[in-house]
Length: 422
Image (cartoon, rainbow, N blue to C red; front, top):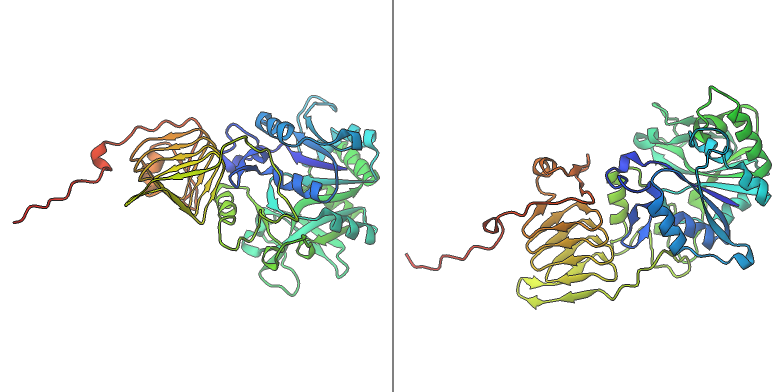
């Protein structure tokens, strides 16, 4: 059985999480972030899935309920499980507490193993291979892990292991992370994906719930305690995971889209000629809710007024009316009007972009209308003065509901050339 943790606030992705849970944030034109872990389970033939939700879950609930129907006649389901305060008067206070408050799900289903996975990473994984590793090593807990550069390691749980992949130490977001022996400059980071023996999981979270000093978190408490007690805790090397139809370029691809810069970079990974994550692999389909939208239309071919897109993903329902798009990701029902220029940007559902608008390295949230002649992403100070959010890496975010005053026509319309002879 799978239990997907989808209740986090996603504060570092604000303002994209201002009105939605982090797993429900749009990604890659037509997907939501949670679609990737759901596809990993379905493609791995694991069909009993519980999604534990909490913060601002309405859009997530709609997406899953409308886009992910299963076949109950075969015992398949994807159930959305809201926080219910079954164990007291508090919401989930940690990842382990989220499982503890939903132990009834395990008691009801009686699985032998429980996959406890996060919902906010972009990657492909054949989970059957991790299950095989877990069984082969007779593990009580198996942690999926991936090498990360030492300068980024403080954002992760860092694992120390012996020569047989047994975990001998774990540090949650350490200031001085331990490097991999023989690989200077690299640390072994937990991906936040776990396979537990069901009896072990029930025991450890129930015991942890009684500890008033615990933060009730897998990384900070459960894993460390299991290591201290000599439990059989092992590391699964994600880089060994093989996806049918995938190239070697894709192997080991995993992105934590925890902040705006990482989110922008992961979207840009999709648009290259040879993407390091390929969403077009028919042997590992990436499913999602599909809009009943007409095909994309490109119109106008008149000098500077040409509708086209290069190195971009453009969804159904879009109309590219004389605008130019480069290295960008467009969600359904986007309209780009004449002479507009969009570069290195992410444009979400229903956005309207006016004539002569210019965008560079911009994320525009859903249903925003940008007026003619507006320029965003070229002047950080001006963008912040208009109330936009600008990331440390220079990504400008235009939040939902933004209203922008149009500039004067003289500021953006081409001026007639002076052809007089002096």
